[in-house]
Length: 414
Image (cartoon, one colour):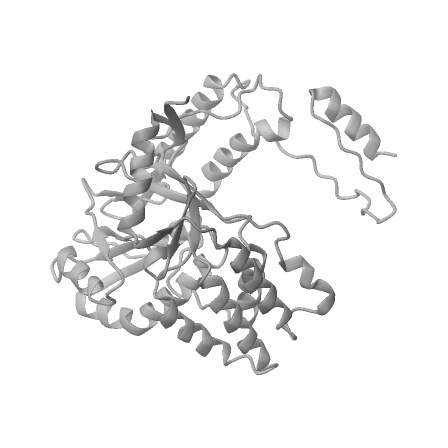
């Protein structure tokens, strides 16, 4: 009988091994803290019937000959696993729910696609990625007294008010004048998907009556509708009251730049916590004129914001080793990512050199060849590659080494 459990750190790629009882205890601590109801009866069959019914009732957004595409033929209850937050006190879990087998999975993906088409969000304060943040920081003025502070929204998905957000989305969909039935069908999908908020663990089933399902393809988009409506309603007043210079948000991570001569982070946090009873905001402070945010460290200098690559304490340099029997494009994927980040993050010379040395160390520790002119392995460009037609036949090979790559490239020519 196994006595230990292996999982990953909440962020980073560290492997965490702990006794099964301790791992189960962390999962069990998470469940009551987020208002899940426990049952031994599997609701999957009932949920599948609801999905079939709502799809059959959809007359405009789903054509009769494609309805089968949005039904999971052999659905299973979502499962949960916990990634350990090593950097947090008491090391709680970061829950990860696998929703791919859930009855509503395929319909949820279609819902997300249709909403983006019919009611696109303005994304006024959203960051697309780190590169987008670095670009915005270049255009942000700096004064010696300016201070950086992050705000974090606690357990975002499980605290989104589903009924209130339903009204926000319904209002956004009224702008779709092409076919008013689209709105009714999408709201019907919304009601069905958001009620299927459950997962299984140790032969028990947890159902949450409020909040969004962890792992569902719809949860990120629905949360954005709620948060962006909240920002539209309140943010102008808050930024004026506290003279906040900049406000950026990436999902549930907020970055503020403000003047402490006019306000302080505790008053700002108190006002944010009064925005909605479901939401709780926590704050941190910069230290030594620098702050870690996303995957960079932002440095405040007298004349500009500088950035360097940030790696969490749980980071390890483990990637697919060069000697591993994997296709070259798989082994070099991590190296390509590291070099792409190096070249796109607009680092200053000192930070650029330090990151390049880190990449070389990662390559060395995983037995990759390194030379002064080391460049990431690039995929070969094949602009004249013929288009695939329905008459072409496919063959699948088990990868056994470079011979497999040679044979597949040879067959592509014929």
